[in-house]
Image 1: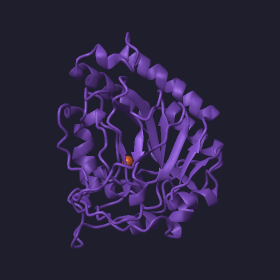
Image 2: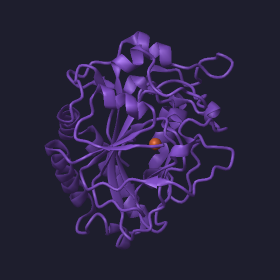
Image 3: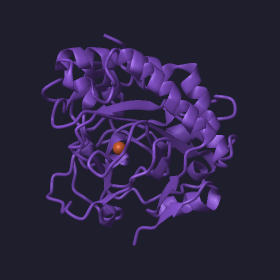
Length: 314
Ligand SMILES: [Fe+2]
């Protein structure tokens, strides 16, 4: 059974329910509304003179990618974005001393197969834990433009605590930082980046789609199997997502049991404390930093590749 909590606060108790597979849908806050407006300004300038959701009808694909790849890292690194995300976390009642967050990602999922790779990649069914996320990570997803069932996220809740044979054993977070993201804008017609995937057939027919209003926040466990619905809405869907971890959860080893992730490394160095931007204690990072199968370190164990950086504008 999966429960969706339609609430305006995410306290410690509810967070534990999300670790058990529940979902939370929080209504827009003052901060999230301001973030929607800020994103609309940046996207409007990026795709001018076209409406961002319709720009795909007017621009050839290389031009669309060029424009979106340029605005993405600017928005993601912008101090206004950071300030508003911190504000949102505080507004919904998270303890800013205990909560650490990472860089928000800006996504654009075009309609009708216009762009299916690179900066417009529509994610196949996956768990974020296959991508070296800690089991107690929560994902926050916010539509910046109208969200409908034909351009939303899909969950496969019956697979939440079922082990799925997958290729996460070949995924190395530091190699991903080194190679994968830096090349995202180069992938237009196909995406050859090695992404962890299920290697068995999964019945995805009974998916769950949560449709919230613009600026709402859908919060869910990183261990949920989820995917991007192939967009058939006729318009590009823009969204923002970021992740949080609770230091207490990490210290106590809380979160879903990591049953089927064998990825290398950890994304925990990307997280910073909401209150003051501090990093997590080194011991907690080390505890979650998984070596490659056989105990050998990552092939990209260089300080430059330990932390995610948005792909540079091209
Ligand atoms: Fe994901």
